[in-house]
Amino acid sequence: MAKGKRRATSGGWRQVAPLIPVALFASAFTVSATDNPAIATASLENGLSGNTSVVVPKQPIAQPANVPVPGTVGPGVDPGEQPTQVVSGLSSNGIPNAALKAYSRAQQVLAQADPGCHLPWTLVAAIGRVESNHGRFGGNSLNSHGVAVPGIFGPRLDGSNGTAKIADTDAGAFDGDSAFDRAVGPMQFIPGTWRAVGVDGDGDGVRNPQDINDAAMSTGVYLCSGKTDLSNPSDLNAAVLRYNHSQQYADLVISIAKAYAGGSWMAVGNGTSGDGDLKAGDQIGDQTIDPPSDKDLPKAIDLPTPTPIITDERGGTRPTDPSTPPPTTERPTDRPTDRPTSTPPPVIPTPDPTKPTARPTTPTKTTPPAPGLATLKTAAGLIVGTVGSTLQELQTATTYCQTQMAKVTITKPTQDQLQKCVTAYQTGGTKAVDQVIRNLLSLLGLLGVLGGGVLGS
Image (cartoon, rainbow, N blue to C red; front, side, top):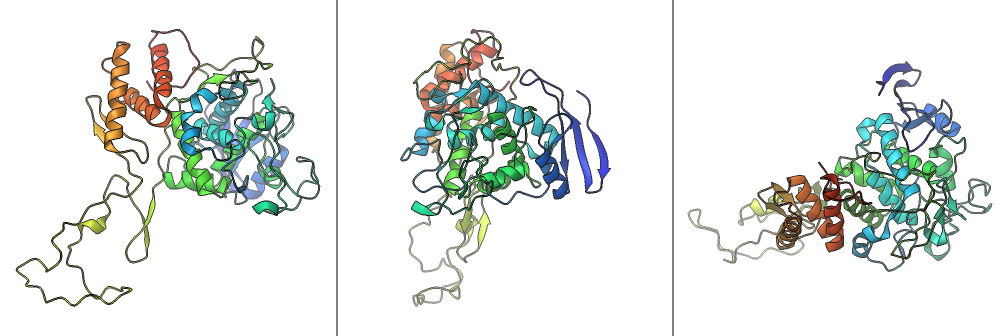
C-alpha cells in the first residue's frame, strides 16, 4: 500500500493517505484529517466521490447525531428490553452483509484518515444495532446497495411526549417534515447534524443518510472528530455520549461493541430480520454480491472499559481503577475530628498514643468500587472478567470454556483464545461460546468456513 504524504495547507498540516480499493467497494478515494474546521466542513459538504476526501475535523462535533427518546434507549431496541437481553441475543440477531461491509469499510478508511482515533468496526456496528437494528427498524431491510427500504425515520422532535424540540433544519429534504426534524437512516442522524458531517461513503456521488455505507462512514467521522483516541476509556465514553447524550445509551453501545469484539456476531442476508425470523432478501443467492469473509474484515478491536468516576468523602471526584480498592480504605481508622460533618462528632477520650484509638473493634471492610473487573490467573495467562462480574462467575466461565475447548481437542488454548471465549460466555452465554469455538476451529482448518465472529490469532 502506498505511504501517506504530509503537506502544509492554510489551515495547518493534513495527513493525506491514498485508499487502495478493496473488494468491498470499487470506488477509490483519498482520506485526510485537518486542523481547520472550515476546510473540514467544506470537504464534508462536497461529499466523497471522485477525488474528494473523507475528512476528520480536529474540533469535536458538539451537536448530537441523535437525541434520547423517553421510554427506549434507542430505536433498534424494543421498549422494556433489558441491556442483558440485547447483549445475550446478539449472535442470533445477526448483522446483514451490507451493514457488515459498511462497518468494516468505516474502520479501514478512518484508520488512514485518523490513525490516532483507533476506530473499531465493532463500535460502529454497536451504534447501528441500537439505532436501527442494523437497518431493520420499522420493517425496513437493506437492499443490495445498502439502502434502507422503505426508509427509517425517528419520532417527530416537536417537544411532545418528552422528546426534544428541534425546528426543521432541512426543509423536509431528508425527513419529509418541513416543520420539525426527525432522525433519519440506519444510524439515525438528525438532519442538521447530517448536513454538517454526512459523507458519501461508497463514492456514488450522493450523501444519503438512508444508505448504510454513507451513514456508517459518517458515524466514524463523527466519533473521531476532535483529537479522539477511542482506545482511551474516557475518550470512548465521551465520543459515544456526544453521539447521543444518554449514559444509558453509551453503556449499552460499549457493552455491545465489546461483545462483538469477543465474537458474538454472525453474518446474515440483507433481508434477514433478527431473532431467528428468517426472510429471504435480495442478497441471498445473488452471486454478483461479494459476501464478507474473514480476510476482508479487520480484526475486532477489544474496547476499553470506561473508568468510573467516584465521589470522595470531601465532595471531589476522581477516576478510579476498578481493579484497585479506593485509597480511603488505606487511611488509619483514627481520622481527624475537625473534618466537616453534618452532625457533631461524639465526645471520646483522648487516645493513648501507644494504643489503638477507642473505636469499635469491628474491622473496616474494604469494598472495591462497582462495577469491578475480576481477574483469574490460568495456565494460559491472566483472564479478565466483564464489567460487574464476580470472581466466581469468572471462574465458572473459564472452566466452561476450557471444558468445551477440550471436547474439540483444543487442550492448550492461548490466552487470547481463552479470553475471547470467556468474554463470549459472560456476554452471550453458551451459544456465544459455541460460535467462538466454531470460529476457532475454522481458523485452525478443523472445520469448514462458517459465518461468525473474528477470533484472535
